[in-house]
Image (cartoon, rainbow, N blue to C red; front, side, top):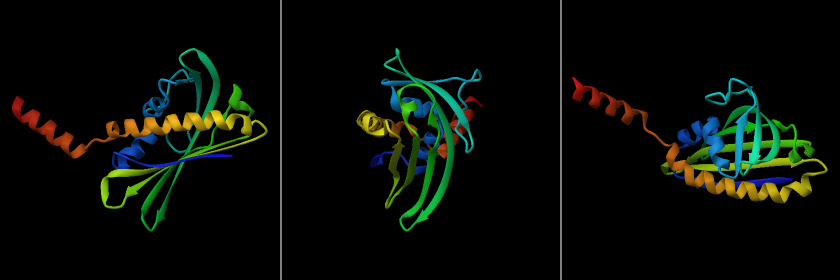
Length: 178
Protein backbone atom coordinates (compact mmCIF):
# COMPACT_ATOMS: atom_id res chain seq x y z
CA UNK A 1 0.00 0.00 0.00
CA UNK A 2 1.20 3.53 -0.75
CA UNK A 3 0.83 7.11 0.36
CA UNK A 4 1.93 9.64 -2.27
CA UNK A 5 2.44 13.40 -2.07
CA UNK A 6 3.60 15.80 -4.79
CA UNK A 7 3.77 19.58 -4.50
CA UNK A 8 5.94 22.65 -5.02
CA UNK A 9 7.68 24.23 -2.05
CA UNK A 10 9.03 27.74 -1.55
CA UNK A 11 12.74 27.04 -1.29
CA UNK A 12 15.40 26.02 -3.76
CA UNK A 13 16.20 22.33 -4.33
CA UNK A 14 19.54 22.59 -2.49
CA UNK A 15 17.84 23.91 0.65
CA UNK A 16 15.23 21.14 0.46
CA UNK A 17 17.99 18.55 0.04
CA UNK A 18 19.82 19.88 3.11
CA UNK A 19 16.56 19.71 5.11
CA UNK A 20 16.05 16.06 4.15
CA UNK A 21 19.42 15.31 5.73
CA UNK A 22 18.73 17.30 8.91
CA UNK A 23 17.31 15.35 11.86
CA UNK A 24 16.16 18.67 13.35
CA UNK A 25 14.21 19.60 10.19
CA UNK A 26 12.72 16.10 9.98
CA UNK A 27 11.62 16.30 13.63
CA UNK A 28 9.93 19.64 12.96
CA UNK A 29 7.87 18.09 10.15
CA UNK A 30 5.92 15.96 12.60
CA UNK A 31 5.68 18.47 15.43
CA UNK A 32 3.82 19.04 17.51
CA UNK A 33 1.90 15.86 16.68
CA UNK A 34 4.83 13.42 16.96
CA UNK A 35 8.15 13.79 18.81
CA UNK A 36 11.28 11.96 17.64
CA UNK A 37 13.90 11.36 20.33
CA UNK A 38 17.26 9.63 19.85
CA UNK A 39 17.83 6.30 21.55
CA UNK A 40 21.63 6.48 21.29
CA UNK A 41 23.38 8.26 24.18
CA UNK A 42 25.26 10.53 21.75
CA UNK A 43 21.95 11.80 20.36
CA UNK A 44 21.02 12.40 16.76
CA UNK A 45 23.73 13.14 14.22
CA UNK A 46 23.94 16.64 12.73
CA UNK A 47 23.03 15.17 9.34
CA UNK A 48 21.75 11.86 8.04
CA UNK A 49 24.37 10.20 5.83
CA UNK A 50 24.05 7.22 3.47
CA UNK A 51 24.39 4.00 5.44
CA UNK A 52 23.30 5.50 8.76
CA UNK A 53 21.19 3.29 11.03
CA UNK A 54 19.64 5.54 13.66
CA UNK A 55 17.21 4.24 16.29
CA UNK A 56 14.64 6.75 17.54
CA UNK A 57 11.72 6.72 19.98
CA UNK A 58 8.44 8.20 18.68
CA UNK A 59 5.86 9.76 21.00
CA UNK A 60 2.47 11.24 20.03
CA UNK A 61 1.26 14.46 21.61
CA UNK A 62 4.16 14.42 24.06
CA UNK A 63 2.79 11.50 26.08
CA UNK A 64 1.61 8.52 24.00
CA UNK A 65 4.43 6.08 23.12
CA UNK A 66 4.28 5.12 19.44
CA UNK A 67 7.28 2.81 19.52
CA UNK A 68 10.80 2.68 18.28
CA UNK A 69 11.84 3.16 14.67
CA UNK A 70 15.12 2.42 12.90
CA UNK A 71 15.98 5.06 10.31
CA UNK A 72 18.21 3.64 7.57
CA UNK A 73 19.39 6.37 5.20
CA UNK A 74 20.41 6.04 1.57
CA UNK A 75 20.28 8.33 -1.43
CA UNK A 76 20.56 8.38 -5.19
CA UNK A 77 20.42 10.82 -8.08
CA UNK A 78 18.41 10.35 -11.27
CA UNK A 79 18.74 12.53 -14.34
CA UNK A 80 15.36 13.20 -15.93
CA UNK A 81 14.52 15.40 -18.94
CA UNK A 82 13.24 18.17 -16.60
CA UNK A 83 16.41 18.09 -14.48
CA UNK A 84 18.27 16.24 -11.77
CA UNK A 85 16.18 14.45 -9.12
CA UNK A 86 17.78 13.71 -5.75
CA UNK A 87 16.14 10.95 -3.74
CA UNK A 88 16.55 10.36 -0.01
CA UNK A 89 15.35 6.98 1.21
CA UNK A 90 14.53 5.74 4.69
CA UNK A 91 14.25 1.98 4.40
CA UNK A 92 14.44 1.39 8.12
CA UNK A 93 11.67 -0.40 9.93
CA UNK A 94 9.43 0.12 12.95
CA UNK A 95 10.95 -1.91 15.80
CA UNK A 96 8.19 -1.70 18.44
CA UNK A 97 4.71 -0.24 18.79
CA UNK A 98 1.74 -0.48 16.42
CA UNK A 99 3.82 0.17 13.29
CA UNK A 100 6.03 -2.84 14.08
CA UNK A 101 3.20 -4.99 12.68
CA UNK A 102 4.28 -3.81 9.23
CA UNK A 103 6.61 -6.03 7.19
CA UNK A 104 7.58 -3.26 4.77
CA UNK A 105 8.50 0.38 5.39
CA UNK A 106 10.00 2.22 2.42
CA UNK A 107 9.90 6.01 2.55
CA UNK A 108 11.40 7.93 -0.38
CA UNK A 109 11.52 11.72 -0.71
CA UNK A 110 12.54 13.26 -4.03
CA UNK A 111 13.60 16.84 -4.65
CA UNK A 112 14.02 18.43 -8.07
CA UNK A 113 14.02 21.91 -9.58
CA UNK A 114 10.82 23.53 -10.79
CA UNK A 115 11.50 24.53 -14.43
CA UNK A 116 11.90 28.28 -14.69
CA UNK A 117 11.64 28.76 -10.88
CA UNK A 118 15.10 28.46 -9.28
CA UNK A 119 13.63 29.59 -5.92
CA UNK A 120 11.24 26.63 -5.77
CA UNK A 121 11.54 22.85 -5.57
CA UNK A 122 9.26 20.00 -6.55
CA UNK A 123 8.81 17.68 -3.55
CA UNK A 124 7.65 14.11 -4.06
CA UNK A 125 7.06 11.85 -1.10
CA UNK A 126 6.26 8.13 -1.31
CA UNK A 127 5.64 5.80 1.60
CA UNK A 128 5.19 2.12 0.82
CA UNK A 129 3.99 -0.15 3.62
CA UNK A 130 3.22 -3.85 3.58
CA UNK A 131 2.11 -6.72 5.75
CA UNK A 132 -1.11 -8.01 7.23
CA UNK A 133 -1.55 -4.82 9.32
CA UNK A 134 -1.04 -2.43 6.38
CA UNK A 135 -4.76 -2.06 5.49
CA UNK A 136 -5.62 -1.18 9.10
CA UNK A 137 -2.70 1.27 9.50
CA UNK A 138 -2.94 2.93 6.07
CA UNK A 139 -5.74 5.43 6.99
CA UNK A 140 -3.78 6.67 10.00
CA UNK A 141 -0.56 6.96 8.00
CA UNK A 142 -2.39 8.71 5.13
CA UNK A 143 -3.68 11.28 7.65
CA UNK A 144 -0.23 11.79 9.19
CA UNK A 145 1.25 12.22 5.69
CA UNK A 146 -1.29 14.94 4.85
CA UNK A 147 -0.25 16.75 8.04
CA UNK A 148 3.39 16.18 7.10
CA UNK A 149 2.82 17.65 3.63
CA UNK A 150 1.27 20.78 5.14
CA UNK A 151 4.21 21.10 7.52
CA UNK A 152 6.72 20.72 4.66
CA UNK A 153 5.01 23.52 2.73
CA UNK A 154 4.89 25.73 5.84
CA UNK A 155 8.50 25.12 6.92
CA UNK A 156 10.22 25.07 3.51
CA UNK A 157 10.75 28.87 3.35
CA UNK A 158 12.72 28.63 6.61
CA UNK A 159 15.14 26.12 5.05
CA UNK A 160 16.49 28.53 2.46
CA UNK A 161 19.63 30.49 3.02
CA UNK A 162 22.16 32.09 0.74
CA UNK A 163 25.71 31.29 1.88
CA UNK A 164 27.14 33.96 -0.46
CA UNK A 165 24.93 36.62 1.15
CA UNK A 166 25.85 35.33 4.60
CA UNK A 167 29.56 35.71 3.77
CA UNK A 168 28.96 39.21 2.42
CA UNK A 169 27.12 40.16 5.63
CA UNK A 170 29.93 38.71 7.74
CA UNK A 171 32.52 40.67 5.73
CA UNK A 172 30.48 43.89 6.08
CA UNK A 173 30.24 43.34 9.86
CA UNK A 174 33.99 42.80 10.06
CA UNK A 175 34.58 46.03 8.11
CA UNK A 176 32.32 47.93 10.54
CA UNK A 177 34.28 46.56 13.50
CA UNK A 178 37.68 47.28 11.94
